[in-house]
Image (tube, rainbow, N blue to C red; front, side):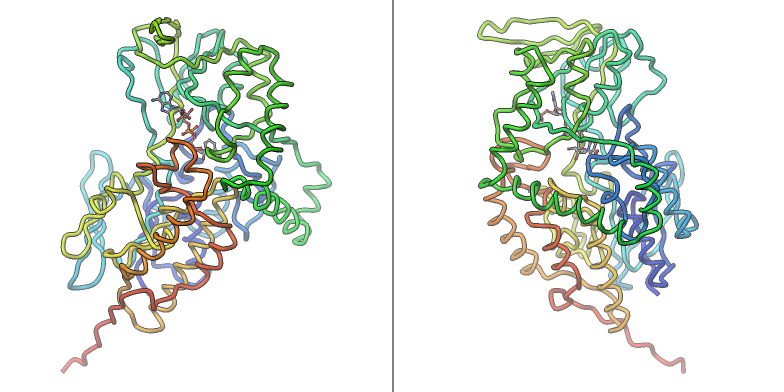
Length: 498
Ligand code: NAP
């Protein structure tokens, strides 16, 4: 059986571990840098952290859970992943506090040496036939480059590294950033803070979540009936594929209607015309991730929440200073605490790992111009290395767990064929990867994501993060690993001992 190293214990790494076990393969190790499993659902503990795809679909197709409400909160999702680890016997395979720091291809044996270096500890090296990187696109918090931020006298922390020891009651709190995370934590902190000032660069399109608790009758039906479970999943899936998928395109049938609906909702919820103007996007819906919230606008209306759209110039010991207008007027906003909600390094698919392939090839260097892979899964020049949630596999419209399950199928299909055909290593052909990426570029030119200059989906104007089609197309294309698209290295023939 092949020895497999999986890096990361979020939805992707755990999902693959479960599927390997189900196929009778238990020669795998899941390396996790943190002291607990769950990936993004371990790290993001900010108040109000919750899923923005309904949990019935943002979960494995093979494992239901007693979801208390439609859009689960972070602690529930983390519980779900721990429940899966327990149910499917994954704990024995998981190594916590073991960050992988380097992968080196060993040509003579056709395998990878995997270095893991715990903080302050010794590096250990183990050999694996196959490595799967499942480190996610949203795992490294990105700090803004703002003059003086490190000189601020009060607490400053990133939303993904929330400092729960800081009591925000009665404090003046600043949020730098107004994205998916801020929209969730601002309503929570506004309840207790004296004032919240949101420094917003770009407004977001926000539509109501319409969250609610499931009734006992619904929960009981879901527990008992597979048909009811599948129907619930299908309804959420179909709506996302219908509305969300349409919004991904420059030519959209629903955009006009959806934008009017979102603006009407904003105008109904917020009475101050100045705030309404600041919160109204001036770019087409779908160009950036559409956000869902039942309480962001409500919090702005009901509590002392200010929206500042002037550019941040610098931070002093006790204030954020903005500049505005032709005269470059400076305004000091006195605050006690700064929350940095500026997102993640979404293009660093590997950092801080070094990957050295055959002939000393360095993957980080190869990806300098923008990460690229075949189906987001394999990279030419790097044999027996798979990515989950790799380049161009993020979604703007549906559950990422669907993509992760497709990637699991592909990897299992490749492993099965390698075992059956006595293949030691597979490496995707450069021309196959190129043709695939040419196709992506052609199709992405019609996407809504290129209608704005900057977002976390883009690198140098190129969409590096998102998948271009429907989730069903990705499922079809990854259903079976076509080994004709790969260079194959046979296992050496066994020689009889003389
Ligand atoms: P984000 O969506 O990238 O938002 C970052 C915010 O910070 C934006 O408002 C951005 O403004 C602003 N910003 C960035 N750099 C700045 C700077 N130098 N000065 C001032 N403002 C700056 O990050 P996020 O809110 O952490 O969310 C990241 C992603 O995580 C989301 O898109 C989503 O996919 C995921 N997420 C998911 C959930 C979920 O429920 N599943 C929840 C939270 C997050 P611009 O818009 O102008 O760039």
